[in-house]
Image 1 (cartoon, rainbow, N blue to C red):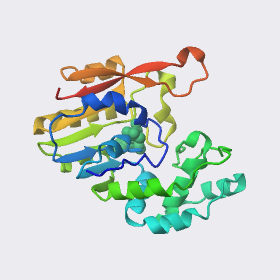
Image 2 (image 1 turned 180 degrees about the vertical axis):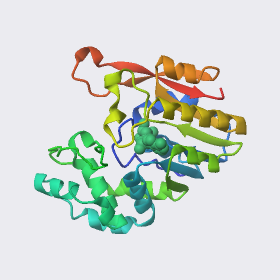
Image 3 (image 1 turned 30 degrees about the vertical axis):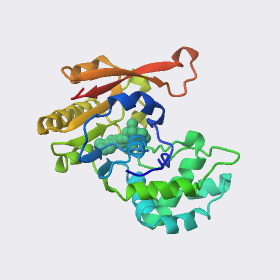
Image 4 (image 1 turned 30 degrees about the horizontal axis):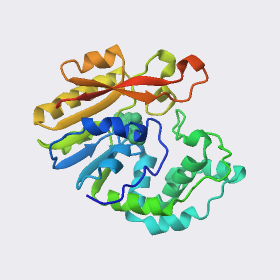
Length: 271
Ligand SMILES: C[S@@+](CC[C@H](N)C(=O)[O-])C[C@H]1O[C@@H](n2cnc3c(N)ncnc32)[C@H](O)[C@@H]1O
């Protein structure tokens, strides 16, 4: 275990930083040999726990490339980041670049720059996988937080980082592995499906496939913890497991009656 905790280096939809105090009593009390996080996103739980050995997975190629570059090429990334400016024309010229045509370092640099300067700090892609968030017009965004990136790089050295589907976790998980699953949430209503606007929509069939992976991890003797929306569908998918309610702040909503805390579920196969 390290001493200083890094902060998640990117702003990520569904980030769990605000829920960590409520998660604390729900993490396993037992020691675990390996930590696995198959929907790692901004990594709030990983950077909080700082396990000595981890497998981090996400299907977002840009995010995984970024983590690999921060881990393995930090100095080059810090140099490249100095080329970016918080200006509208620069933003749109960088947004227009094809990430596949860039070097891994340039690609990671573009990713972090867009994350720090885009409207709401969102990373959203259209159905062709192209980033489509407008310029955020922030006065002075901290594009390069060098101290934190160094802590992130050090933490990632204790992790294998893979771009893949969540089910890949089955290649690694054994008895004694702690697996935290934080999938795109099942929508509260038809119009609330944020993931429906991205290239990686996660529908009811994926939720069912995930519940199958949860059960397989349980059968193997892993410690499994999962977050999801508080909906009858999710409660029914995991009936028989321990279900706890936590309170989350709602995403920004223009309708006043839809602001304020909402309940979310934490489902575990241990107590
Ligand atoms: C709710 S977010 C995770 C947030 C994270 N816990 C945090 O604190 O920032 C869900 C993540 O799942 C990823 N994802 C979506 N579909 C996936 C799949 N089939 N396999 C693996 N990851 C997937 C998304 O790219 C996204 O990063």
